[in-house]
Image (cartoon, rainbow, N blue to C red; front, side):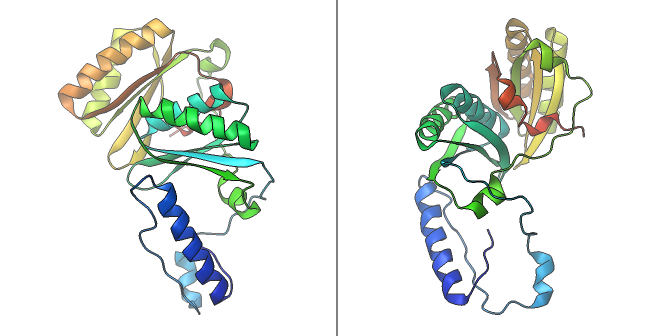
Length: 253
């Protein structure tokens, strides 16, 4: 994260951010390295991320649930949207395969949603941390509180049929390819897309009726274990459209 200002303000901001990062990391992964440059050279500008272009909006609260892997983050999204009246904003990719699921709404609703999201994600994979931020600053919302633009998928079958969703995640390309092949051959399902989050983690997503997706996931998980490391296999019986619209695996590759 980059901030700018006079030296005293930046020092204070970095100290506060480091403290908050440590408090939010559930015992691991807090603020590792900080740097304050009193007079940065103009040549360093090319190394910095561009400033946010979206306008920050005012919301009651911003909630974040961070997991390792895509399947856990999607499960967190599913848990949050079904538990409270919140708006799912986006999934944001960190480092080391970590994915943050973000939601906004009233403070009470976001608090309930984050608790449900953590519980849902923990049943699928590893939860790294969670946080409810009351009245987030407009600059924070400009950075994190806007949805990514998604490209429409060519096959939009899921839109009208409310099909179940199955996710299988591995740390091996061989494992994922063989798992998807097994799933498509074992049941009447379609492959909706895949998504790489880093740290060797890639998830494949299938759609179909609940019984077919369950059968396919069982076959895919067995193949993934044979040919690589299975990280997660997860079934969402009734995914909400509000969640589906935020999922990045639907981009055309």
